[in-house]
Image 1 (tube, rainbow, N blue to C red):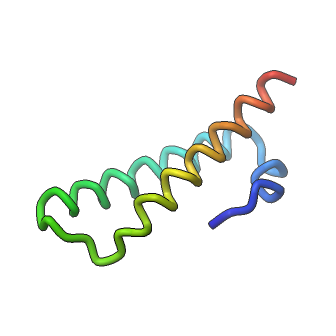
Image 2: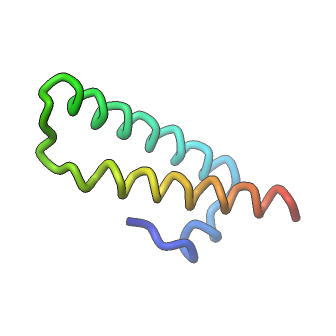
Length: 65
């Protein structure tokens, strides 16, 4: 999990790429859950969603400045 202070040091394009990567990871986790009705590490879905929200919040803060 990435801390918000580390994310604030990143540029907006870097953050957007990280969000895209998170979207892919989240898609894979949710897809696995739907296919197998079981995920090896179900807590990762919640963590990835929170991390994505954290990144999107920081992007919007930077764009408002």
